[in-house]
Image (cartoon, rainbow, N blue to C red):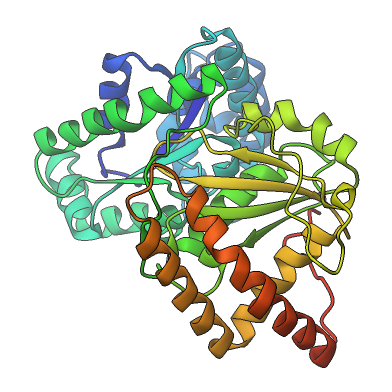
Length: 405
């Protein structure tokens, strides 16, 4: 099933988005509802809270005195952390139970106000953040909830910043206009991304790609996007030794197809096959029939260039996962070529010129295969000798940048 993490700051409009997604057919798991249930009278959670914070946080009928508890932790990060250490494990366990009970073809949306603060952003296929400027949220809190300006600012300041949430977001829904505008954005997200993503996930196929190469200028957010996906892939299995951003989108300033290439390091090809099912479940179907890279002249033996290739089922973000064995020729080549281009602007400029030449020749193609073949001669006659010389001159050694653990 497709699992979506939904979050947003206080008064950003997250609840409206959650309600709309439920109306559209999502299974909603609301962390706030679960947190309230965790401290109902007679619960183990309430007993633990009372033991920690004292009987003064209980009402005469034995239920939780929420204002008293809020006062006990307000302005004291250590006490807030203590409370969270009691409540959050209970909420997560119940959320896991509800998710497991959902239909296998469901889109499950977990509404988690503190998703970023609790470091859960890598546990979902996508993270959706509802965002609004602080000034808009303060106005809503004072007008709709009767807070003072100072109280509103304090509540906002106690949460993650907008920048921190956006860094975790695959999708940002901006709510600085009317509710109707926000709902329309939710509907588009559902129809154009979530439903197709879930469809692809259930069928075990990557998102459709067609047409010839379309180069776009380098984007400053490619590394950040890659980092979010790398975080998810690292959690797939302990057999994943490292995950690295490779390819053209990993080279600042280099024009590229808007496809993120990531290298997943494993110890053996048997390990690559062992984690394949988990990568599929994480949203990266296996591309059958692609079992090796094209050998280079220095290492012509095809058997040494084995790999597995997965690609993203998400129609909103094209990704290739190249699963390679640590120390193999293909693994070394991917890292060294990236590092060479990063360190040598002249080499990067040469490569971009070749990319543009080949893209112009194959822009009307039905696929990018002709584009890839067009570049091979340049790799063989120009890039590979220069890369080999650069490695010798610099003493380059492979250093995966995202080792797990």
